[in-house]
Length: 525
Image 1 (cartoon, helix red, strand yellow):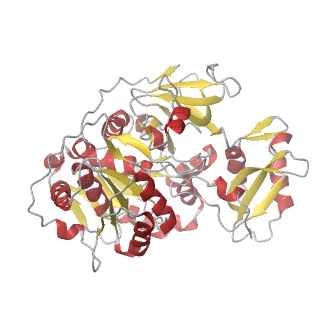
Image 2 (cartoon, rainbow, N blue to C red):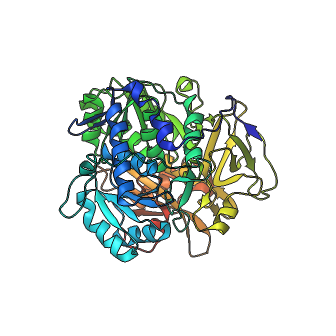
Image 3 (cartoon, rainbow, N blue to C red):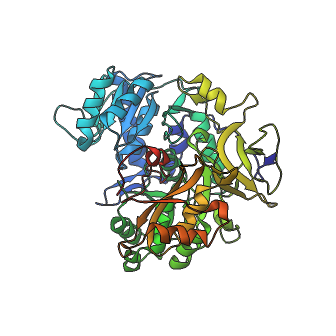
């Protein structure tokens, strides 16, 4: 068993809105949220006051403890206000992908039994259709304004008394994000107020923030990584969050330059852009002090190329999953120069880990031996909503959550994640990690992006199959050249044996490759 070297933290038995905004009065007129496109700013005093007024209006509307409110929006400065207002009113918030189809949204509404929707006017048609399909939705509210719908802006004028809700942080659900579905049917992940708030305290020693820090929120708040690293964590510590609705490289770079961003929490595709795209040279990024990448494997050489280009300490990584609130490992900000390349970090405070054999789950492995990563700690989810069997398969009777990720630990406690258990390719009995081949393919100057999955050949052997996006200047790149490039650099059993050229690698908003979409029969170009 591996234990954190940090001192344990006490469970934070506070509702998440109080855990995050407890010091809002102290921060007062300091900017809490800034719209990265038009500069609209909310101070800490305003964020605290606004979310309390909207909570009062929601309660007056009929929102009660135990209700579920669906928050369906891209990143805006209204998103945190809506989130904390809903939890203060006693509701659990199920966050919805803003690009979800009406049918996908309806499934989430039905599964979570959501009675309320908060959305934005450009997404109203999808929200209305989803509500019709699901049934049970009492009202659709908007963050901005739209005819026929009440606006959160109007609700700021409510004179109703502020709700006093008896929230049990250990039992009551604060957030109900849905797992990405990359390994199965999306399920509601029940995260209590205590689990989310305690995870923030666990992360603080390794990822401190303070007033004056400026964090750029470009990854989505609806995803647990964005909800924690870009919303709850910085707002809890008095930092300023500059919000962008989506990732567009020029807008992203301009926001770093114009708002003097100090810290980035991103996913590997953004690291790739920072390392390779010529547009980066046109902007002043000198305010940056650190970059952390998470949500998907980041190749060490790509991380090094990014940090070298920007003149920063090495890009750090973090590790976790929705079911873990989400953090378990991070490269501490004060150790980025010392961390070994490729590590996802060390165990955060109050967290335990086991590495168990892929062949014998009862066998614990030691330093340097790769196996499945198991986690135990106060951040482990309450369970999957309505899926007790799936919960039992994920969390064993001793409280260990089986991540499905393969990794190993070095003698100093640094964790290295090799790949997903279910994504490992078994070629004639040998295990091949897609992430390793993807990292290698990205070193080819003619390849802009790549994903690798297992496909079966005519002999019914599972073989590595690369899906490759050509650079615009490499239109003539052939399958044979790709296969030869890999073959010259890996052991024979790791060779890519099938290549398909595509226009773009399908990814979740978090940056994770959606391998199931590559496995589905479809036309590729």
